[in-house]
Image (tube, rainbow, N blue to C red):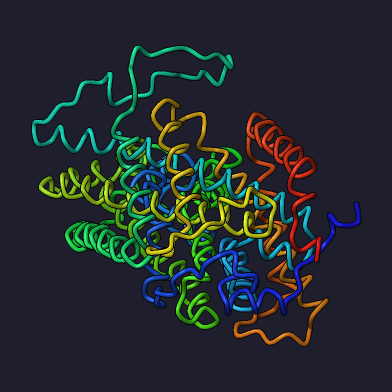
Length: 493
């Protein structure tokens, strides 16, 4: 049992980062083709999705009012704690695998396995969730152009009632648009990381253009008069508190917990460390740069939206569309839907890229079947892991309802955040002499704060979500003790 606490030495990880494998010749090198701009775009692609188009309105109407922009700012500060820790680890240990690799280097194999298994859940379920959402927006966009797809082929055949824990059938056959987008992205990821990055750059450019158009044409219509509602007759920026979590400063804080999940996605940048041209310099830029850009966009959109339409009208699935109509710029409606569809496309791409790189890293260490670590001789991508992920994600996206899978993404991400924050502090203690191209400032404040905040937010999630996570981890531990522990390469060495 002593082997379950085996740690990978920093020297072996640095050899792995330089050579592309552990030197045994079993795994071909991944292609180093990602620049700092590509990494920032991957982060923006993972962060900017439905959150900016949906969560803004919900958090404003239910929690913070016009001060929802402050909620986004607080959410970004919370993410920055974890982001700083990710940046230091990614520059010090520039190996694909994200929090899985960092836990292997700082805590031990068993914890690394738990985090890796957790990340597989996070990225796969995240991709499933976003693919289902993408399907809904895509069908709606086609409807704007007079193209109407039959509902039997655009919705899930299964429905789940969270109140009664009962499953039922909907009469639909399959959610074919969700399957199609996953298959297309998996194909692109197999063809090449450079091609995937170029595609991501294009669609990130499209959605940033859409957001910019909204800000440019809606900002002149902003007026504090729209802050006046029945619950806020004086038009205060922070409406008077009604009860805990509803307006006032407590509402701003509750809103921060709600919109925190809109920032999830920057951590996927760290999974591409072995495909970055200069990971020691570019990984921190990619992680922190994308987080900074998205913070500015979220705060700006939140401020403008609540300034052009009263916040109590924004608790709808499409608050940006409501704002566009209120500002008299209805011609932007179809363009915004295009921005949402392209935005969700890049989120799926980044999540599937992260999932396949974590799976490859675990297989490379022997904890998963060796075939998942295989790299395509021509494309130099983890094609086996990518195809397997694509098949599973596409199949589940075609049959599952969106409400069942969303919260699992949040709890998995927060768990990984907490471990990375603990790990970066442990590495500082165990290896203070190690060269760190990027260092977390005020480490004794930032790292504990990141771990504590992540755990507190986990406690706010429903019991059902915790139960599903526990079941998933139980399955993972069974696989580890029956297979992974006996095939672990670091433990054998």
